[in-house]
Length: 356
Image (tube, rainbow, N blue to C red; front, side, top):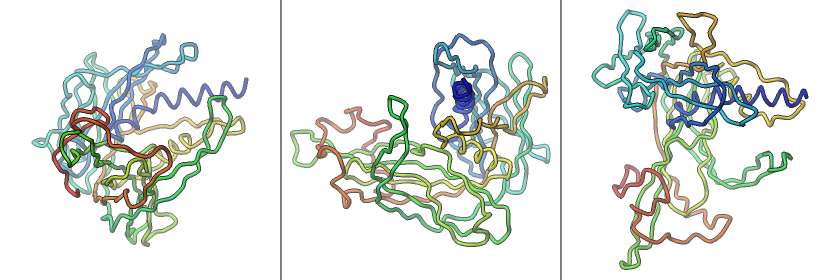
């Protein structure tokens, strides 16, 4: 019974935090069904020092606790809210909903984010309920000095269909960001990625295969964050992501490096602790992860999620995966048809991206 209660608590915590991670990784939240009616507001998003609407977004959803009977949870998007970000000098920036997505975006014409200022998110729902974040400061972030990668074998501990912990072996390219930490103490970081790879298809009627590129968005399977407690003022390498070793083509991996406040780092640290837990009966019960959002209207109301203000830098590297093939599994064969219309991968284009 103790194990069942712990498992239930973990699943409930995970489902309420899932939407937070999805926006940070530039993935749309998913929607399922449940019979529960109790809901909490989930707030997920950030602003950066880059005037790029793709980076400056906030997603609002309602989520209900996990329904253990139906094994499902609902994520309902919040529409028609009034969303603004205000700095500590009183300047305000509106965010507008993109269609009926529940995602609110800061437009380029309204952008006024500066280093050294702190920013607060304000939300007013159509029914008048108000929510806000605690202020988040935009801290500076050092440049990415370089990016390295290593082709290696990985061993992960996973649960099989019978619930037994087993080892799963795979190969891939471990990608690391190289950073020179500033001399002052108390620097906090988060990293995310964008993966684009080349692929070919056999059109059957021309000697040269058609070539396209697929943008996979973020390929991180967990939030990557760190602090300078162990390497303050020194050069360090941070493992950020594993690029799959599946087809022998070029893969461009872009790394985005964000600054964090200490509070934001602690939020992601606790989240990662629960994310990497295998769920053993001997694990301690998961802690309640508190974000920086709260209800102005009802201080006792539970609000899930975190609003971040960050400086950001980015760089990329192209991995020549063909030099490490053949990879485990069946021999790779070119798919048939025009690469633009095979529907094998998302976001396909025949326009050559930078780096290829």
